[in-house]
Structure formats: structure tokens, C-alpha cells
Image 1: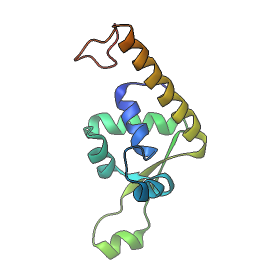
Image 2 (image 1 turned 180 degrees about the vertical axis):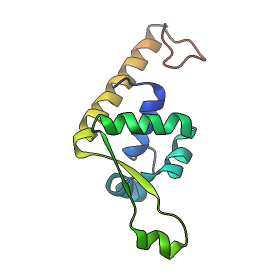
Image 3 (image 1 turned 30 degrees about the vertical axis):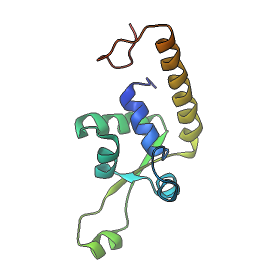
Length: 121
């Protein structure tokens, strides 16, 4: 999995990073639905959903529809949720830690180029 800044952003959201403690447990167990993920990550759908599909194909993320009764009770269509899998949680955390360390090393070495994703030459 290529750890672009956008992939890192999606993984952090699905791992509940940056989400308050009470809500974080819900994110890990229930996941986030598409529009919610779009709001949290601030990524457009054309960027977000291809990333989610690649993560799903890699086995790191699963998707599921919410129960009909929940949506009907709220008078809206069902939502499709995405959550990190047991198989994907540890590799995702490791990849994020590695990417963070790599980015820190690039900054220390003076390789950062503002305005470019990843910041390296």
C-alpha cells in the first residue's frame, strides 16, 4: 500500500485518531459512513472512495450497510459504513508510524518542499 498523505488521512480517521475519546471507540467498532468520512478527512469523494476501495481490496478495510430499521426510523436511505479490519489495524498503525518517522527524517535532512505532497524530492 502506497502511503500517500491522503491514504494516511483516511487511515487515521478509520483508526479514530483525532476523534474525541468517547466517539473513538464507536469509530473503531462501527466505522464511519461515507459522508462522515468525507467531512472528517476533508477529501472529495473522487479521492476518498478510490482509496477506500484499495484499502478494502488489501483487506485493511471492510464496508457494510447499516440495518434497514435504523435508516427507516430516521426517514433516510441506508448508509454504507467503512471500518478498519482486525487484519488491517496493526499494519495500518505500523505504516502510519513509519510514514511519520520518514516525514520527520525528511524535514530534518532539509528535503521538504512546501506545496508538494510528501514533501520530498
